[in-house]
Length: 119
Image (cartoon, rainbow, N blue to C red; front, side):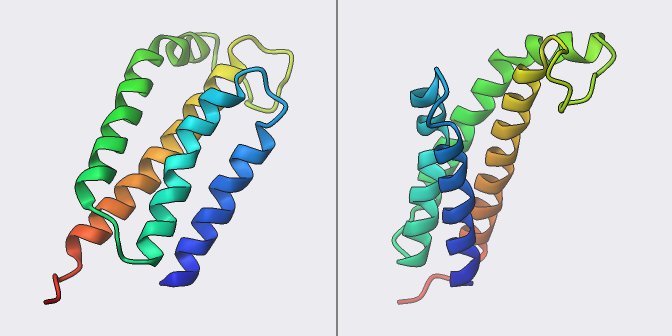
């Protein structure tokens, strides 16, 4: 299981690195860095499922607040996310980035809640 946590650290660390030259780097670092920390804490088995749930709730709030931008992209006929000329494409890429982060956080939450407590 440790290697899955290390893969998570690598993936979300890479997400942070890729956004290093972006104008809103701090926002993306704050979105992705907690997932890196959660994976590291999971390796050391010092993670509380309530922290993950709080992080997931914050991601859900972010997605709901930005749902209008996703709706605009969808109303435009859902152009390819790789088409750099289309309007709202950057917004939908960001939406799916946060959605992937949310799904990963929820997977961690379910995984930690499922594990039996040892004394």
